[in-house]
Image 1: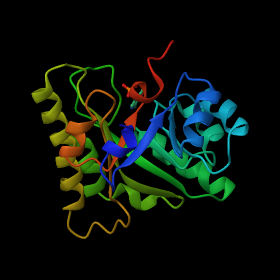
Image 2 (image 1 turned 120 degrees about the vertical axis):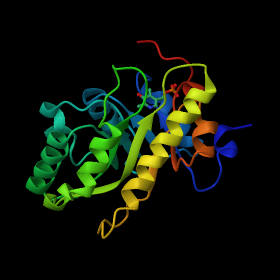
Image 3 (image 1 turned 180 degrees about the vertical axis):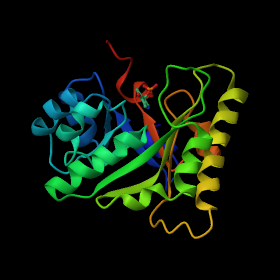
Length: 215
Ligand SMILES: *Cc1c(COP(=O)(O)O)cnc(C)c1O
């Protein structure tokens, strides 16, 4: 069965096409897929002009501050905002060119130190102190996270549950005053069913769709 038939209605499938040629994206597009995920700015910018205009591009990789200017205005959703400095920069660049950027805040719960993101208490603090109120051209739509890279599915489930709990802590803040904060992006090829059970609204799936990546 096709993956998009297995994923429940109401959960968005982002097909992670990083490191795969645009021809494979076109094939998936022709089969009906519209949302694609890329993790490198240069690669994304090379693919955009070769592919249909109505593709919804999600940026899912670590975004260096010196690449923000190139990226802003070219994506439907930047899923990987991992610092306050970065969101402030995205906001400033968006204001300059007169667009509103949609973003997710990345939270770090996994065991690996190599992964990026706000620590849970840091992220909740950002919202509790309403530091987002200075943003004029950025719409924070929710949060994104990754589970630990392990076969231990109880560990993976605990990580997803923690991401969902961070989300609930944020929406539970009194008088938060944040509209349209309703997305939890979590789950990849090997762990997405668990992520969906724990409340994911967006899953990001690469190798199950396109095969293994050749780096
Ligand atoms: C590469 C990547 C994915 C997809 O991983 P697969 O295991 O190929 O499904 C999802 N999310 C992020 C942030 C990624 O970098």
